[in-house]
Amino acid sequence: MRILSPALLGMTLVAVGCSSSNEVLVPPDEPTVERGPVTIAVDGDPNGLWWDAASATLFMADDENNRVLRYRDGEGISLVADLPAAPANGPGLGALARLADGTLVVVRFGGGTAGDVVYVRPDGTSAKVPNLLPERRRIGITVTADGQLLDGYFVRNNNVNVGSVARLTLDGTEQEVVGAMQKPVGVLAVGDTLFISDQLAGKVYRAPLSAPSQLVPFATLSMPDLLATGPGDTLLTGSRDGTVLSITSAGEVSVLAGGFQQPHGLAYDAKNKRLFVADHDGTPADGTTHTLRILPIDG
Image (cartoon, rainbow, N blue to C red; front, side, top):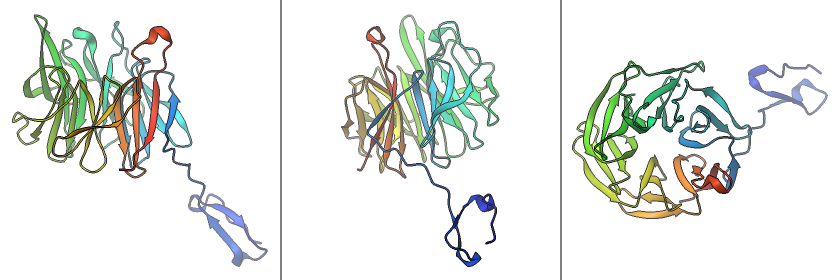
C-alpha cells in the first residue's frame, strides 16, 4: 500500500483497504462550535469584544490585566498580547476594533488624567497612539467600511460632561465630528450609518457617516452601554439592569436576554447564531466573577 504524506493539503490519511485505489483523504476534525448557553470563567475582566468571522475568533479587551485575549472554539481563552504600560489608576480598557490588516485598537479611559488609545500589530507588538489629549475619557471605538476609526470620549468641565465623537488615526490625530453629547459609550459604524449610545441621556442616536453631526434620536432606553450588530438589522446593547437589549431598525427596544451582572461588550456571530457577552461583576466585595457568556440566538 502506498502511504501518502498526512501533510498533503492539510489532510489526514485514512487507510480503508489494501489497495491504493482505496486510499481516502479526510479533512481534520473541526472544533465543535459552542453555542451555549454557557458561562466561561475569565482570568481577568473582559470589556470590549470584537468577533472576527473570517478567523472565527473573539477578541477581548481584558481591563483587569491590561491585555488583549482571544477565544476560539476548541482552544478556549488565550493571550494575544500585553498592552503598553497602564496608567497608575488602572488600564480602564473600553471597546476594541480590528482593522483590515489585523491591527487591534483599544481605547483606555484614564479617569480624566491619562486617557489614551493603544494598539496591537499583527506581529503581536503593541504601541500607544501619540499626541492624544489625556483628559479625554475614551470608552467606545469603531471602524468604518473604508477603514476609518471613530472614537467616543467625554471631558468634565465644572462637573459637567461634554461628550464628542472624533475621527482618529494611529499617527495621533483626533478630529471631532460629533459634539454636544453627555457620555458617549457605544460608537458603531454599520454600512453608511453611525450609531452612538449616550449613557447619561438614555438615548441611542444615528447619523449618516457622510455627515455625522446630523444626529437624530433613534431609540430611548435605560443606561445603554457598548453597541454591537445583532440578527437581521438589529442593534444590541447591554443595560445596567442586567439585560441585553435589542433595537429594531425602527428604534423599538425589547429585552433579548437577562440574568447578567453588568453586560458590557457584546459580539454576535451571525454564522453560528450565537451571542458573546462580557459580563462584568460590579460587586467584587462578595467575590469577583467576571465571565464570558455565550448564548444561542435563533431569531
